[in-house]
Amino acid sequence: MENKTISLREKGVRVLPSKKFMKITLILILLIILLIEAFSVYIVFKFSHPKSINLQPNFKVYGIKDFEKVHFNSQKNDISLSGYIIKNKGSKKTIIVCHGYGDSKFMVGGRTPSDVKIDNIRLAKLFLTQGYNTLLFDFRGHGDYAGKNGVTIGYNEQQDLLGAINFVKSKGIGDKIGLIGFSMGAATSLSVLDKTNDISFAIADSPFSDLKDYLNSNMKVWTGLPDFPFVPMIILNFKLIYGVDYSTVSPLNSVSKSNIPILLIHGKKDTTIPYTESAKMGKLLNNKKSKLVLFDDSTHVGSYSLYGDKYEAVLKEFLASI
Image (cartoon, rainbow, N blue to C red):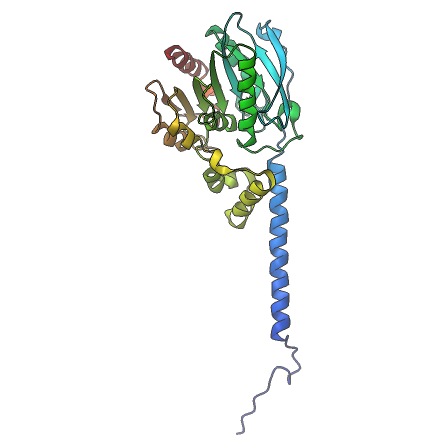
């Protein structure tokens, strides 16, 4: 029997020339990359412009009569910020409250009725009993500034906090300046410790230890997207759009260089920022008055809500020790 090899062309099947096939394949790959890039930029924009709580509480309801609305500049002078000083007459000691991502100067958490909440005015009343003035202010992109500026999870926010510290000093109430921060605000507070000598102590509730490492490991928590290819693209675009230098947002590094008293607080059931982030930093605390306090059943920034009296006792004990 005679063997005949019949090509696909002879059978009437159209075959794409190899060069044309390669060209179409490359175009498809390029389109996919462009779509991922466009979506990553969109995610960065959404992520950096959170919906923020914006309350206007009545101070008198809290029994607070001596307060002042204030305005000051970020240290880079790229933005004007505002807040309130709650005054302790005659005191030259001040605690600056640093709220979390999507929060405001008056409240941390509380975006839905079931969310845990930290009432910053209630905290200010506690600080009054300990002899401190309190400065409450909004980071860029939050509260009074929601949607107006890009949020950088501790990078440009450091400049906002350093501006607040300079402002407190200019008001003559900065003989002793302490920081208390929550989540993003906690990480920001710790990150400035190696950038100023004006801080006497810091309290950090639910901080991450390093921004880049945290985003690499926990981007799913914020976006719900698979790690690959979105995480590296989002991190790169975050850097390109906002000029973020991740090495400057490393509480772990700053804490290792600091000798001031630091109180770390974290809930063991925190899935947003695992308590192991604080535990890592707890091993590097240099001042003998520093400590790590873990609450067994609280979620992200939920320790004050769940353990109110015990939480306040921890704060009072720490403040009394310094």
